[in-house]
Length: 390
Image 1 (cartoon, rainbow, N blue to C red):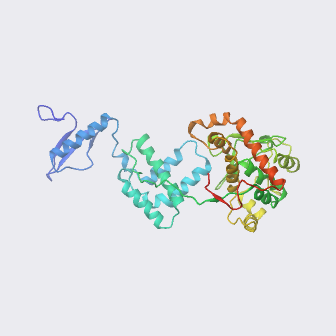
Image 2 (image 1 turned 45 degrees about the horizontal axis):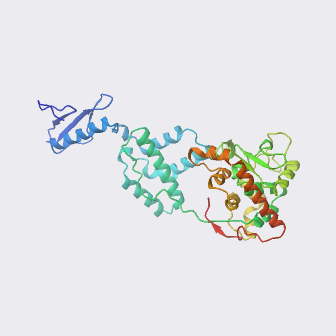
Image 3 (image 1 turned 90 degrees about the horizontal axis):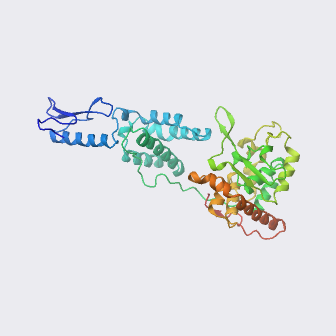
């Protein structure tokens, strides 16, 4: 805006020896700054100042000097300063930065990142043979970092991560085990690990959750288990106990009555009387079970291959339990509470409301086991059938 004497009310403009026009303006902190480039005409410089003034008045202005920080530096700070990240998540984020993001975009200033840059980066990753799943994870991390830069730190005006569909994964379908297959698999495990397989399947427990269970987390009659923590492998630190994967992961799960005798037997045979004694330990070490040791001790790869389930993951036990529970006629909310899935801020409300529904789920699962033991046909999933992972 220009006053009657021809002077602007915001900022100033002068012509340089080159003939181009330079614009200067006071930032919100009162410090005078120059436009990032010069202009061909006075009018162009005035228009730029008008836009900048409007951005400052609306609270949308960003400091161009701060936008010169390199993405790699900012992203590392973002991970270090992010509150509440689990050790496993920090490990994943730093791996994605180190392998997928920093070598290719880490040297770019935040203010120079564009949607075109990010679209090309994603295409290059896929062309280099990086899986769609890993690329999507890297993109989601990049988007979260830049969203903080735009929305919280006001370093850039908008998040350039606007590549449609780049955040989506299309994971391969996982096998859905039948009740008969789970009991067959459990029977092929060392006796001290049989209950581990059954709890993972019929309790819908993650590996880190089931291996972190202590005597105090399990009812003496095997009727429920309380999930309040999870074990994660942290490089340089070994197994570390931390919170479950999400807020909703803290939960009490009702165990089907037909499986409870197996839990009680395990408690009496293999678990020390100390309330803090781990439910599952190494036979010799007496310490928590590590996944590689479990696979080696149980000959997991060989066993599942001989069962016609080559490539079966331990997590597929939880997946099977989720599928069975979903067929028990329960609501999505109750099912999510049993699985420990976090759905925005309502997860704890779902959890408190699910006790009766969880009893119904457990009863239905018990009926499936009883049908299997009577030799009846298992109608809850054909061996090797496929369904999407949830």
